Image (cartoon, rainbow, N blue to C red; front, side, top):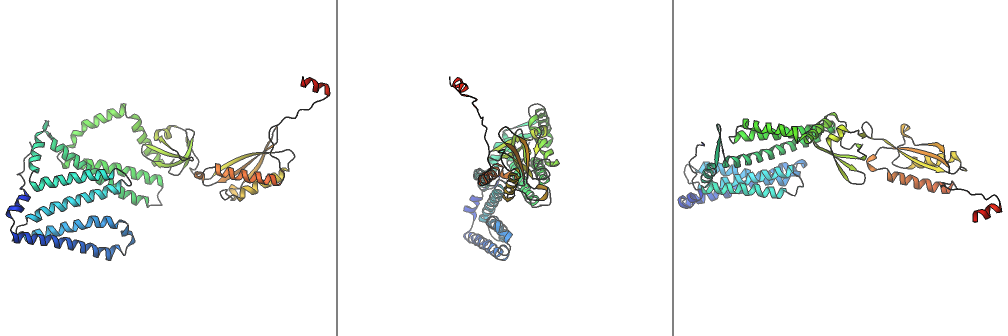
Length: 432
C-alpha cells in the first residue's frame, strides 16, 4: 500500500491566526518590491536586448508574459528565505504556490499555442489546464490535498505486486498529458530548425520531422509513467493486444503509416510535385505519414492513402524536372499556305510569357495528317509551372491563333458535305 504523507497545514488559517501585523507588513513589502523589481528587470531587458535584436521582437509579448512571473517567483522565494529566521512568512507561503501555478499555466499555454497554431480548440484546452492547476493550488493552501489523496487512493485494486488507484490514474493522466505537450513543443522547435535547412531535401526533412516527433512522444510517455509509479512492464499485455489488432483490424492503417515513411525516405514523391494517380491530376500539397493530400487544379483536395501510392502506378510529372509539354491540335483549310500557318502558330507561342524559349524546349509545329475537312497540325509548347494549370494557356494561344488566322484569311474548316444534282429528273425524283 502507498505510504501516507502527513497532512499539509492550512496556509490560510496560519495566515489569519498566527501572522503578526509587523510580519504581515514585511511580507506585503516584499511582494510589492518583487513585483516592481520584476517589472523593472523586464523593462531593462527589453530596452537592452529585445529592442536591439529584431529576432527577439517576434515573441516579445510571450517573453514578457512568461518571464515576469518567473522572475517574481524567484525574488519572492529569495525574500522568504531572508525573512524566515526572524519573521513569520505565511503570506509568502501562499504567494509562492500562487506564482508557481501562474507560471505553469502560462508555460503550458505558450506550448499549446506554439504547437497547435490557429486551432480553435486551444482556448478550451487552456481553460481545462488553468482550472486543473488552480484547483490543485486551492487544495494545497487549504490543506485538503491529503484528504482528497486518501479518498481517491481508497478506490484501488491490486494486480500482482502493483497497486492501482483512482488517484494514481488521475496523476498518470496529468503527467502523460504534460509529457505529450512537452514532446510536441520540443518536436516543433526541432521542426522549425530543420525547415530552415534549405540544403536538405524536403522529403528527407519531412521524414526526420515525423520520426523525431514519434520518438519524442514515445519517450515522453515512457518517462512519464515510471515517474508516477507505474511499471511500464505492465504495458506488455497492451503491446500484445495491439499486435493482434494490427494483425487483424489495423492492417490498412499500419500499411499506410509504413508506406508513408517509405515514400518520405525514398523521395519518389515530394511536396510540390505534380502527379497523376487514379486518374487524378494535381499538386502534392501535404505528405503525411498516413495519407497524401493532392490539390487538384480546380481547387478541390483529394486525400489519398499512402498505400495507394505504393501499390498503384503514379505518374510524377516533375520527378526530375518540372517542365511539361502541352499539345494543341488545329485544322486549316486545304487552300491555306502551310508554311505561313506554321510560322504564325510558332510566333504566337513564343510570345506567350509562360512558354519556354530555350533551345531544348522551343515551340514546334508539325503537320500530322490530311483530314476529311482540312489539314491537321499539332503545336507543342513547354512550360515550367504545371501547378498553374493548362487551360488558361491553351485558351490564350487559341484566341491569338484565331485572330491571326482571320487577319491572314486562313480558314479553320468545319465538317460539311457537298451534294451535286446531276439533272432535272434526278432533282424531281429527290423532291418526290
